[in-house]
Length: 211
Image 1 (cartoon, rainbow, N blue to C red):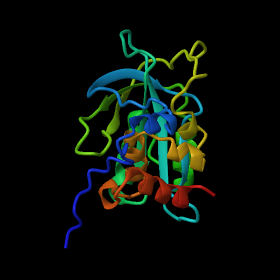
Image 2: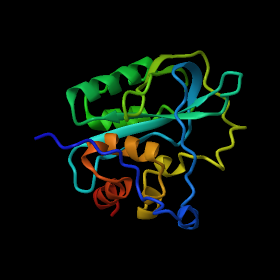
Image 3: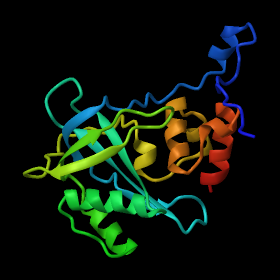
């Protein structure tokens, strides 16, 4: 029997909305870029390759793309995530490495070296329309001429700082917005609809990811 889909509205006010405000943990303001194609660069130091969870032999990778073209979205970031535990995921990942003209790796170790060389590379990338509760696909189309000038890039207020250093605390996960939890769940082969509340999903992710 299929499990009934939950609305996952989280804790109710119980008629006292002030209690929700008193107990609120401010969200870090994560937002996906609108659907479209962008010129940008790979944020220096953002590329990560690591096990999908504690003790796992399966791997995942990610990097942060920064919009460089003029306009209201200049400086906005989007994380590209790759599941390296499936052939499809590896094909997508190696496709993006080739799009950045880094070559085609023959092993995980080679892939990690190539990913580390992606810092500052100028690229064209696209962001798909989000589907249901899942985050959009992010793919690199091609490498652009010249590497980006990142000397003036200020990441002191970086919303993706926790993703960039590869570590999340229990507090970080429990402070995530619904959209962030959905993306983190998808990144770890979890379906948010399998959990009754966002708090329950956060607890599962904490047990899975926090050492």
